[in-house]
Amino acid sequence: MNFTTTLLEWFQQHGRDLPWRQTRDPYAIWLSEIILQQTRIEQGRPYWERFMRRWPTVEALAAATEDEVLREWQGLGYYSRARNLHEAARQIAARGSFPNTLEEIRQLKGVGDYTAAAIGSIAFGLPAAVVDGNVYRVLARHYGISTPINTTEGKREFTALAQELLPKEPALGSDEEAPASLFNQAMMDFGATQCTPASPHCADCPLQLSCTAFRNGRTAELPVKLKKLKVKERRLQYIYIRYQGETALHRRPAGDIWQGLYEPLLADEIPPDAILLRQNVKHVLTHRILYADFYLWQPAERPTLPDGYFWLPEADIDRYALPRLVELLCERLN
Picture 1 (tube, rainbow, N blue to C red):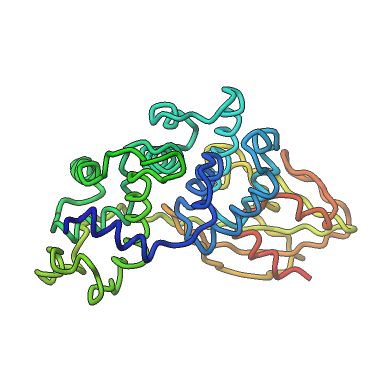
Picture 2 (picture 1 turned 120 degrees about the horizontal axis):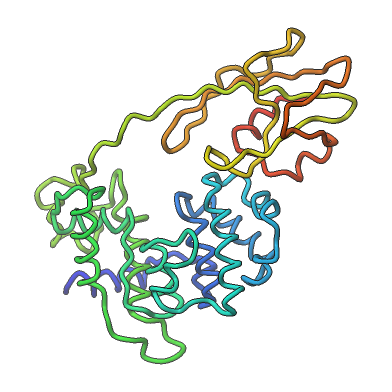
């Protein structure tokens, strides 16, 4: 039995039951793919469910404000995904329907080759293979491929192999799911639950006999990934101002972390009567590590705010999308 047939049989028995797999609605499928970029399913599923309840159609999402979308996204991180999601929804609403070709799907803001292939194959049955971390791992181990996955050569090699393995035949009927869709979902699930990064379940793997890495004792070595550049560090000092039931925020500008989100006063100098609530709180982002100090300042007179900051009732702060770090810091407030 070949790789593809074995994988599809495994998926029939062990595939995950996920709500976005109960529909062919391209909006619901696209939304799940964007949310699950760099997010675990357990964390992302409640967000997908909330988005679908609040904005059940792409037109409804397009009509929302960016602030509303960012607020609903709060806690997921990588906020550029939310901004791209909102902009893409407006692209789709403007054209009148969800695009149904790979070329058109790729033109949506925030959609790359992987996401386009996932949407195209699952929603429309297009014969396009998905290639993500799970796919790299499964293919590298099974076929013993040592080409680094984060190189141009590696991406080209793995994409070509995944496309070669993909079943190209169409669905048998209008109610049947296309084999390409099933294969892509099977690859995702197999990598996520069977051929896991650490401690893969080789003992009961249906591909064990044909797996090069298992046969040669190289499971822990594959896939190969070149080391990344050193992560930079950055220090932040936040001052939460509390004056007669109000506080101050400003919206972070473009060109830096957390674009479009809100934060308290960010300052180099700390008022002498400010109270230190938390110090050296570590927060890890993709390309940098943040260390933050958090102060509470309750001035006797209303201070003049720097440009861009505004006053608001403390009770209304939950209406604004805050970075996860700021949320954690604010938990120390009384």
